[in-house]
Image (cartoon, rainbow, N blue to C red):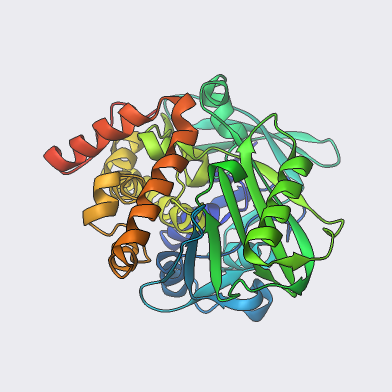
Length: 404
């Protein structure tokens, strides 16, 4: 049986960041990926400035193949039911529009970790000294690898996470996020911006932006509702309210499950013993649905924590939870009403854009946001968010008691 220092499940941006730290420290690192690389990845591809800086500093300039057209995004535009719109430029200039299929693969290769694609994670068994990982090739061959540490960087429905907490996904709300692609007849929406709608009638998460000569119409809603019906309703709204005239959706649509609730209520999951959970599997997700920067930074922190654990002979979970607290603070701040109002936690300046509006429009925007937030009332997050806001105000941080 083969023995290595670290096994990472999922060839994601989080995996690339973790692998880069581990390989640079001289640790033998193997990445297991169930699909053939380069693999398709469902994502809007709009990277935050913070994520862009991380890529440049750790992997270098992105190759052209790793970008969609338009290749850059200038900022975010919020749209409200009152027909008020707010455009906000990113701090520090434009950011890349990633083609995740090729950008992720490029980052994985730049980490110089060994990769086993077409290989699925099946299970893990921990001892005091190692983790026995069982995996299976696409051809059906089952094999074991013994590793000192295991990292789950395998997305919101993480099999590694399920191996630790089988009931976890039953106890948090999961949302379906789907996008369809349309050839454009006429689209007044500025293609330099990512467009987001605070409109409860459109669903829990609605967005649009240009990609490779087409327009994305994206919708998010509770699992169990019908994607096709939701999409038609949103496309009709765009036409009637914004003058967005599109051809019928092309055949290539896509969707996936998401778990953004943990970021709102500080209910993250970071693993057990020698198994670390990182990236979006933990629950990290920024307010506009951008999870790439969280994935990169949390992945790097997972890798650094393993290096620290080996160097200092300390339990890795203790170090990981200490180190990850800064990423928790940054991400949860983006959902914290007090931080949004007074501390500018986002990378586009919402308070400045709001202050530049006429008072009547400001009132409309705040009223519309409040109406939108009531969409989440059924999940009973309101009191938890309020309590977390006061906790952050009084203690300067968020408690770790709710973490798994």
